Image 1 (cartoon, rainbow, N blue to C red):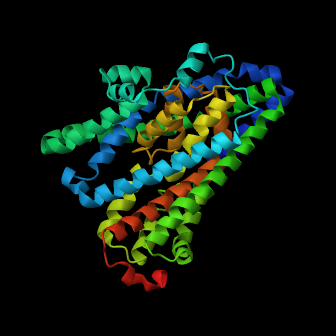
Image 2 (cartoon, rainbow, N blue to C red):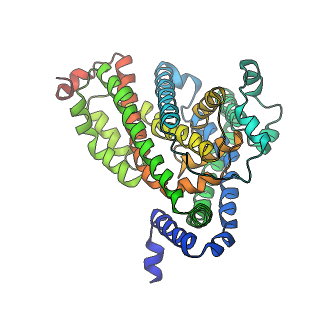
Image 3 (cartoon, rainbow, N blue to C red):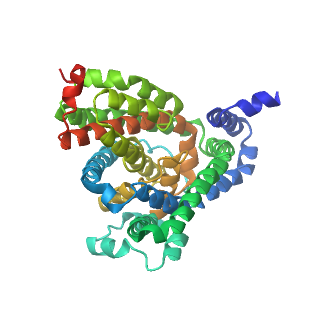
Length: 412
């Protein structure tokens, strides 16, 4: 029996916790209120990860290029496409979440929403204040405040400085690399609390608001899937057309990789197969081996779109109206925050918690989202992988490599 229990995956435990929490909320409401502190315990665990994880992952991600010159022309072209694609993902996400309003009908964190939080969320930051704000006067203060934008910018500059310092900075880079690996493991440990946090959150929400609380969660999943489909059709497919690739044959070549990413919710597991597929298409190794792994750190189209929807969803559920200016500022923050944490399990949840903290939104919605996160993770992971393969193809076209002549079965 114990062997069977220990063989269950984390996803299975989360589903079990979801059902158990639902039953407790319906039939044992008093018990549901007693276990609510476990939700807070899990949230505190997630919050303590944010600063060291972002710092270590961004620094090591930047230094994976080997040198500043290693970024080169190909790197600049790749980053140009990455930013274009992620910006479109954010815009599409914000449009759909404001149009369909999946958070309407929920009432999370209502007891914690103060007038100060509401006022802060509605404040439009001027360009001057935004520029003044992007770098911290004290990095430790940025960590204490959970100001993710300042943490990311500091980490980016620190990472570039290590590249410029060369051999003398190797010990510091080694320390950051070690910290990065440690934080990956730390995140895995904290995620063992996820089933408990999910069960406690669902039990408390159902006990307080009834079964109606589950309807917006289903609407959230539907909103994400619809927005991702629109993103693929309006951004990724036109990019492939620009690259003069036959759409159907391109997807057939990548189908095994996409199915694997969808089933395992891990784009990393599909990396070797996707890399081989790109080379089978004729994309040169020097491009595929650089752009594809770089995209794993800096081009998370599906996750970025998800974060835009999830952040505004929680504000809707908490009854906090975000101004257009605040949503744009949030979009700019997410463009930076999503860089460098792709390899982290449940990376999007970590980034989401950082964003909620930065914008004064209640974290109570996070544990509710985890209950349906597996369904959303499958879709966003698949789009992450597809987006990186498309990015590699687009950069290959910009490099004017004679690659398409090498695989006429895709271009004819």
